[in-house]
Amino acid sequence: MKSITVYTTTQCPYCVMVKNFLTDQDIPFKEVNVESNPDIMNQLVQKTGQFGVPQTEVGGQWIIGFDPNSIMTAIERR
Image 1 (tube, rainbow, N blue to C red):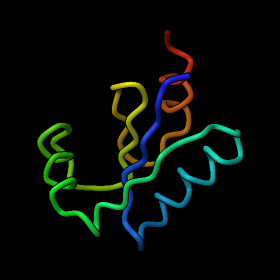
Image 2: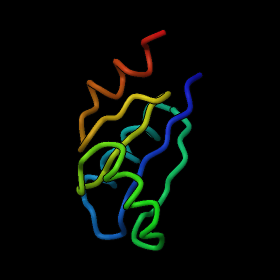
Image 3: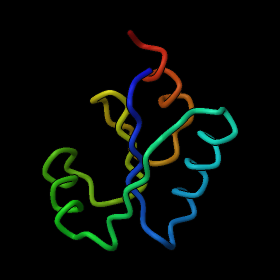
């Protein structure tokens, strides 16, 4: 299975939605809270050009925001 990392902040409702979606689908993921680590946020902005969260990395592919269809498509891609 592809590795999945969800980049979040503490107060982000869409971050909670992504995490709940993955949990409901029994899909394991790693969460990285960028509030506590501004260096990681800077790296995200350099990689994706996006300041917002959630940002979900699925096996090297980036999904911005709460987009369950894109997350599932990225997981299913071989």
